[in-house]
Image (cartoon, rainbow, N blue to C red; front, side):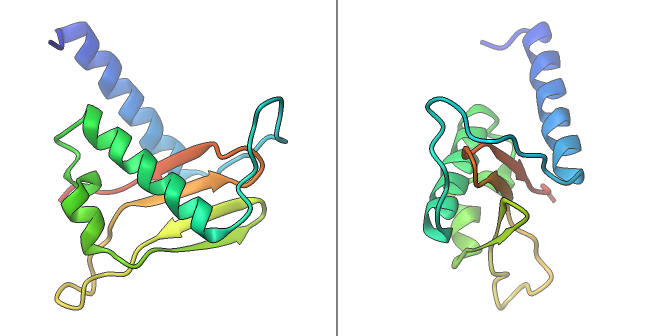
Length: 118
């Protein structure tokens, strides 16, 4: 069960994720056991894992729910400056919708997620 201190820490962590996603992602060279992300399919897989992880720890973040992630299929990933940017396709019935997004370091797979709960 989450107590008040844990909720504050979780809130600070989510705020840090949101702040980090507003700035360009800074990647470090791969180290030790780091596995480089070599293609778009691998980047999309990492993004899905990250979204599921956030949702399993913060169910109120509906933007990362499996049902919402499915709404934005198919996903595409583009590599820019050593960072994979993963975004979905808005549903035809809601062309202005924004789904979950992710920025993934190609060098080591470090992932930052972004998404807006409406």
